[in-house]
Image (cartoon, rainbow, N blue to C red; front, side, top):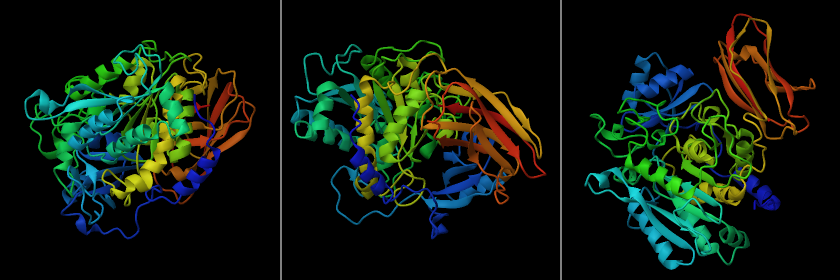
Length: 564
């Protein structure tokens, strides 16, 4: 039951999104660097992927890696540490945005953002007001609560037009299920506000809005608005200068101070756990073992109670075509729709074509870039929520990275006005699309055999100076390629402006991906290129052609893939 009848709304939304603040990713020209010494800012640092991993392991707060640049949070001392490593940090943007001088409600901070307590109270209020639609469950405890230091329950709300047997914590449900979680990373404060509005949008629209009514008559919608309540408490304690705390509040793993304490809950899931940082004070500390944290135990047990296991045990086992259920984990920032796999850059998920197709459907409304974690944020993410629900159950899992990297509506702490002014109108219909797809999320792509309609070459090929190199992959697929196809390229090469990159279709048609430029003196090409291949048959041998058109530099084609 996926609506395809929003053409007029999509045209209007596209036009409006182009005017919304925070949707264009370029740094401000009039940035004031005077805050460097007293407050954290975002530094832009040209690095290699290997250096990014080293920065993460060394405890640097790397928010994103894009186009050869890492975006690192910190004050002047952090910039100096980067210089000590031979890097050249450039000011990118402020972290804190101007807070409106307005009176805000109790249990709010930073211009109107709600505390963990306010979000959890909202669930009970909604359930009391709409007993025919909403049911609240306590699904676990935060770390502080488990050790008697206060803390919170972790709560989920199920919203549907209640029939006997609906909204039970059982994988055997009559209706398909869409779930959405937010603030598993505490400082990503706009995400909790989006789930708050999503809940109200559904319960207030039932019976008056045809689309919402049809959705809730046929689908269960589950929401976990605050997956990391202790962390949110730490963030909110800063008031108009929220604390940039990402992890949970667990102080038992090492002698860390400030935002260094805790475990990154989005690296602690059991599926493919173990590839993030083992340093307890690092922002991406994975914990001593998978599901070491009570918040992750709560989430994994919750997902196991609402989703049947629909996928085989091997990494290459696709979820069957009749698989149900969808999930979104909300994060900030980057304006991305991310789908599995996140744990590796060298292997596509077996349902990659269908995952990308649904991701593209959602991205029609928010304008976000679609891809895996390596294709978007620029690095792998092991132990993540979206990989867990897909890997363990076959559920079509996604991560939304909400907001751009700069400006009033950018970063982890956007102005509160951006929630209603930008983020909610951009994502409302994207959420609805995911919910409506819960009955058949893989209908837009044939799961077929593992790797169907995806081709990848992982054997490195040298790129000689002033030479053309070709790398073929053969795809076994009996349908047409799509307009939402993508080519992901990983090349190590000094002075990447030397390179021209084309995709050659099985029939010999050439699709330019990257032009050469004598002015582009940066190193390496790590990018995903969207390309309309709808005129082509997907099956056959596809070739990546890399031409080095200037003299003086060489490199290596490390890997490439085409998703058709």
